[in-house]
Image 1 (cartoon, rainbow, N blue to C red):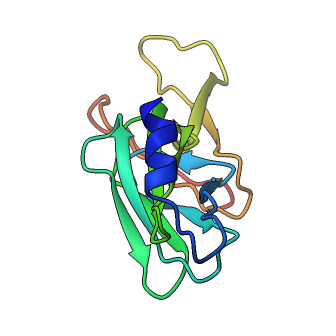
Image 2 (cartoon, rainbow, N blue to C red):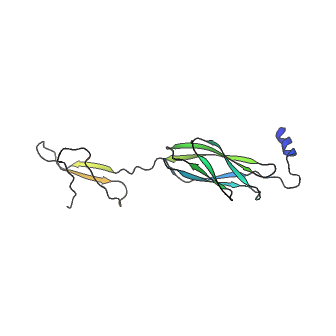
Image 3 (cartoon, one colour):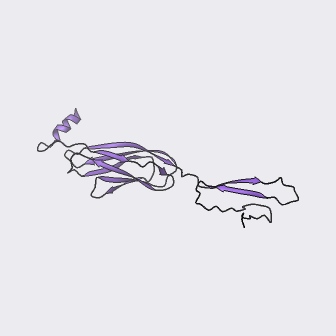
Length: 168
């Protein structure tokens, strides 16, 4: 009853009724962990003269905030560097009409780890190794990008071990 009473008391008898704004979320297809990114939010309201304001009602990521775009009906949800996971948000929007109306949008954002770009190394013994002779190992590497130049290194090895490039 109180909501009905307030709608009568707070109505604008000299103009059309105020429409409720909505938040449209335009998430990207993918987000990468441990890097900052922005999600575009757009406010939509049939009352073109209304000014819209956004508010963060809930965020599962500490430090996430809203950046309004001055002079527009848009804002960015700025996500700080975050670990991989699925995170929930609730963003509100309020108009300047009389009486002011508001609504909200609940949505989730999936953040994934970047693809592993560390090259895989496969070592193949070209012959069985007798204890008193040198061992020859052929190294082949790949990282999924044929344009990359791979460099091999001996991190731990026997004294005197060395890498010799083919065709040298």
